[in-house]
Length: 456
View 1 (spheres, rainbow, N blue to C red):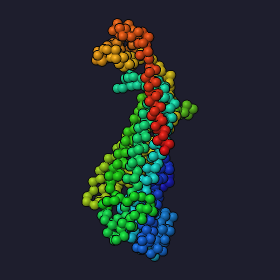
View 2: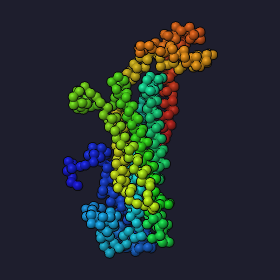
View 3: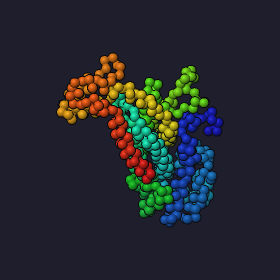
View 4: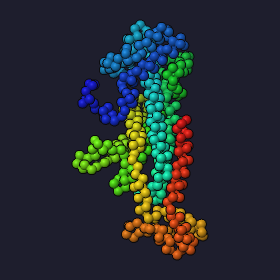
């Protein structure tokens, strides 16, 4: 591949994803991890006494991309059509006479799956950091807007008042649940194997268990206790489903921004560089939520990538190759996309413009018709049947022509309501402050818990 950017094919190479995360999956980085596994194998075999110590030292000294070049490995693979054998033969050549001990007793999947474990351990650390950053951004917004009144909406219609801070606290709590899921998942991803063909370890004889434990210790991985020839693919399927859950949260939050930024609502807006940014090639007035839409688009792709790992769980007997080709595509793409989405989402909410005045306008425009709950419950407490109170408030809040209803005025004029409450009591019951106060108090409780968990 040339360095000319015009030749790049995959949009992840030039449009999406952070360079440092893409580098994690570069061909050079992946070769380096495979060589690291080969070095750990040789060193452990020497420690146990399976191969000479000087041979292990010679192998370890050249087990890096400076001595085993990607170009040489590629050239050999084109001839022999086997990726791991191309690595081991090139490494053996670089190691000189000690090369005959390279890959001793191992099978290809011992190397590739252990290297994958290294890759996933590093990737999961990046994703965890992304989730923590996003959660903290949302917590900060929740704290800042704990008592900022906003109309709650269900089915796209005005429901009951909340606070914008509570909306953000709920989002933060969802993200923190993903952190908990990832913490539980990470040990199941940071695994490898060094148990040879079909996973029994027979090629290593009496030293099999000791050898595998030593290699995994050097790599800081856990051995898959019962692999076939490959590490169980349920692990990658679980990762795919976890990332799909994260994508679901990302799209939910991005969709909320997109909805609240609609001209008719205008309660929030994503950051826009007024000095330079262009919203439309034709409509010069446009200020589009392009980051939220980009997150939505990529989240849909990330969820779709959960399917191949599920299919890969099905192997013929102890193994086949039906998983390998798509894993080379799915694993890096899914992780680079997840990091990209989470990074953008944190920036989206860090720069979010919140229009508290517009929120107050919408709450006032409801004419307090969105506050029926308190009055209905108060009437029930006074002795009315709840269904009768509900029907009464349904009638009082009804608008025949779609114009806002002044519920307080209607309730104060209604003889049934006035039988139980004075005009002042009705006014208090139909005040949004009680809803917002409750929302703020609950936000405080959620934020306090999340602060403790994120500081741990």
